[in-house]
Image 1: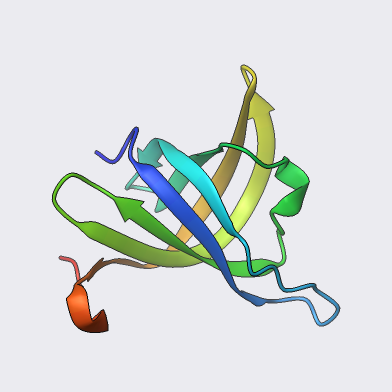
Image 2: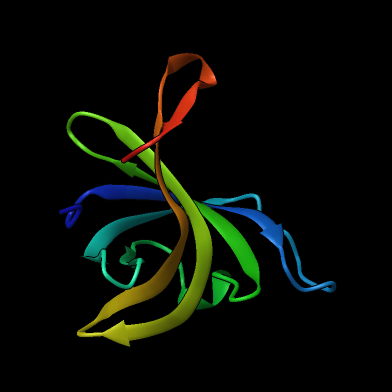
Length: 108
């Protein structure tokens, strides 16, 4: 459904008390979407897997041809598969559409 679409991944907050907040936006693309498990598998493009914290909440922006969506969640796993850097992202509370003027509505 979203496979191949570009993604901007941004840290929202750290979960760990001694965690370091990362303000950088990481470039990814959707490798696979699993709606039954509410997971998105992201391919990390330019950075190393270790820059992605497993103790943080992230906001994931997905650009499609017709809309900009976002969801929040956590990265559950980081691993390499066939020379690709994969992040298993667990979605919390579904997808939202982002409109001009910062107005957002939950997507059905």
